[in-house]
Image (cartoon, rainbow, N blue to C red; front, side, top):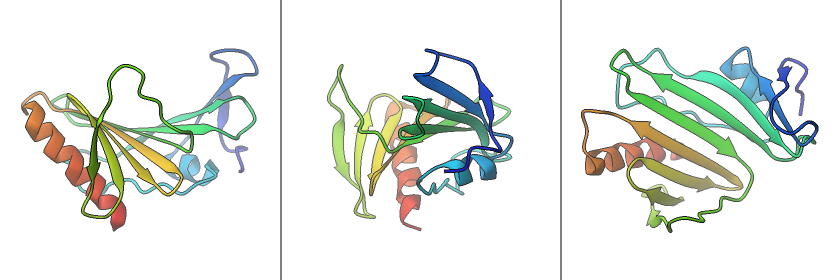
Length: 149
């Protein structure tokens, strides 16, 4: 894992959590110990994703979480976080869904879908003010189906 192109930002607990700012999506993805598949077809018009950075929990590069964000002019947004850490659901149990591409997904109302691909969890959070909860869920499932492509 090469993090030399990332800028370390001091945040969180010193030595336990490190935050790295990535200058581009490509640099962020290349720095991760797993591959990332960003969706190409989004439910709104956007210029694409921005890399928000990588959070290294534990500070040893063993548990990185990368965050990506796509937005539009109407304040619609898609936050995508990827991690190799196991996800916990302490408050509510999500609805389990097996996608057409065979991956296991976990939907939490009103706008979150986690998809497990091999050892990587993709967490989608979709905010679209003009859509109802059921429509947002459908859009999330369509985004997750792109993981097989």
